[in-house]
Length: 390
Image 1 (cartoon, rainbow, N blue to C red):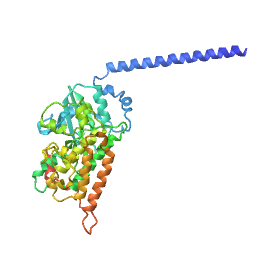
Image 2 (cartoon, rainbow, N blue to C red):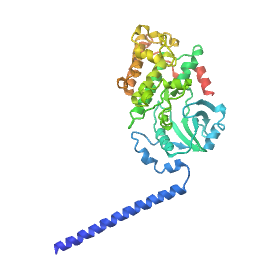
Image 3 (tube, helix red, strand yellow):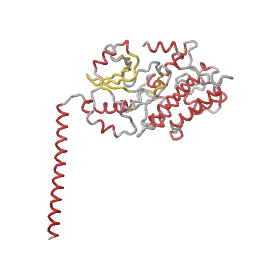
Image 4 (cartoon, rainbow, N blue to C red):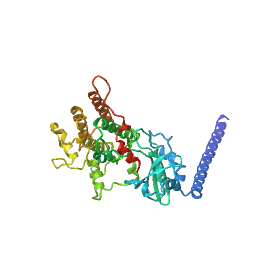
């Protein structure tokens, strides 16, 4: 009798389980059809469709704070902000396209990058990921627009422009110079921005780091621009002979130029080239007295007694030779031809922090016990005004 009862109960349990499985399968099938119908009858804007599953895709990118959601701007709003993308508001041109300065209705000043491009879900997913990355030393990506076969990226506007514009443009203005103790915090800030990208999970490789992509705000705090933007551009294009292509080319590590192999260490190489331009006040592709590029000169240089041959003459005697030597030695480590011998960005941050503190301590005013350090907002008064009026 007990065996019969057990058999009946077992059969009933199996039937219940079978019904449960059927119900789950029916629910999933019904849900998929519902989503499919919604996509077919909903908005044709991929950003709207991607919004329904972007959380799942973005959740694969660990270590990111998603409270900063990219805003989807209307084309009309950005046209008004830039006076219909007037040439008066055109402030530059980069790999992504033309860059315009704009004033939003809420009073926010922004930089808008614009290029032709068909709407795509991949674009929106990548933009939403990049906009979620927030750091004091990174330029924030605020949002995007995809309309009329145009793709646009909306960034926070950084008023004092790029470091390269100050190194190359401000030199003709008497009294307007960036002393070594001012350049060191800029280098440290940019290093912290890159290090933040590298310590994400998974790490984000910048892939397009160069002096022109290090901007300074109204207090001359360094902010790294265009982080991850190369992911929106596809493969690296090594073709072309224009001066801009050649200038960008020298920032690429040997393994990138030869094999297209990007990594955190290739970013370190690019950062080393940036340090070289920062200390020399010249473009790294320019030749030194030995008819080598500045990068080759640093890679091969051993005689530190002639250090002054590459140091920016505008620095005068505003630095200590001991600290300058350590700075250039760190630069040489970063541009090592072997990626394995280059330091990590975290190590670079630690070293730059130490070098900055050492320079401040050695340039302390006798008897006052405070470092000789001008506030960033007091620097480049003439240049800052010119830059902001573009």
